[in-house]
Image 1: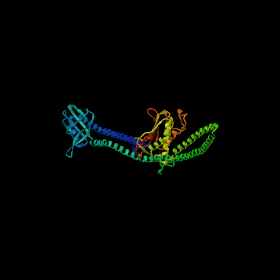
Image 2: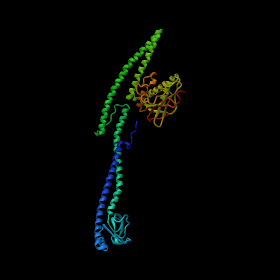
Image 3: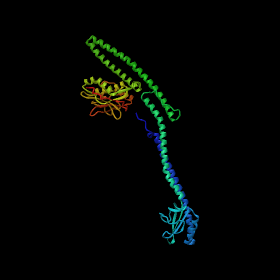
Image 4: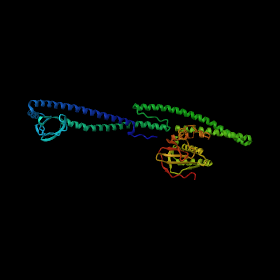
Length: 475
């Protein structure tokens, strides 16, 4: 049975995580677009102011020459806090303006550029940011007209610094919210899964609890409960019909068998040759009757196992002890057919199980192995605790089962062509599969190297304790 997934592996968390990522990307794109559009607008406004001042100074230069431009710059520098001017000669020596020295400007003449400069504030030089344009004048002179954009620059830096943290905060809070939502949803689903597991185990009376919220989980629980009520009624009716038919037919079959045995006793007592022939025919009829009774017993046991009615007999069970009993039971048959039947030594393992059911399942596997293994072959039984669970295996050196036929041999009344001539009902592996399902185990049919079939009952990891190594039952 699958374990409950962690919060971070739930579908709800994945959906929330995808939504958070999409939301973070959308917010980032929106903020970036807002930042870019706002900066473009503010730059356009600043450029317009600079262009207007350049146009005015150009007209001043045309009318009054360089000296008129210098006088204008000196006058405007006294009354402007945001506008910056600098008229310099070919060696970048200041002629007029409110900048003390020529700043380091990258770019060609005539382009809008941004640069850093220093301005005295309260007697101290403070680094500032400006945006402006440089154009040349005759005689090697250059004129810089700019606007102080330091406050806007600080706002932009704060925005670009805050943006990554904002996105990170969205991701963290969104992930935490997704984990919380997934945890709440997982609790509701865990209740449904736990109830489903109990129903699968055979308790058809279990129902999914409701919390009274009337949400989609309550609606789902109500529908599941109605479905389970319907299934329970159908299963109960089917079980009653099956039990009645099996018991009603098994009783007259037992009476018929007893009468046939009485007839054999009377015929053998008379001892005539004709009576001996009749007795042989009756013996064959008794054998057919025994096979019919065995079929009904197997069907009833499979029905009881599937319904979980034998769960009350669950207890701590030593698989090694069960295997030893089965080996002891089948040793005479194995010796009669010249087959080596061996219980492999190893550490005993104890699981929670029904002794009679596991013993019957193991007996069916051993019976099949002996039946289809040729004389001189080997049958090996092993109970072992592995890294993935507890295994109870029966390996033989017979012809095996083709891989293509293995999925269907566990179905009821299915017999392969090679086994049509041998006695059997086709219910042996079906019973083993039912017992495996009853114990939440798995029946695996594998190749046994170098030849043969290996049937493995793999129980979930539920070993209780270790017991001393078992001795070979054949010794």
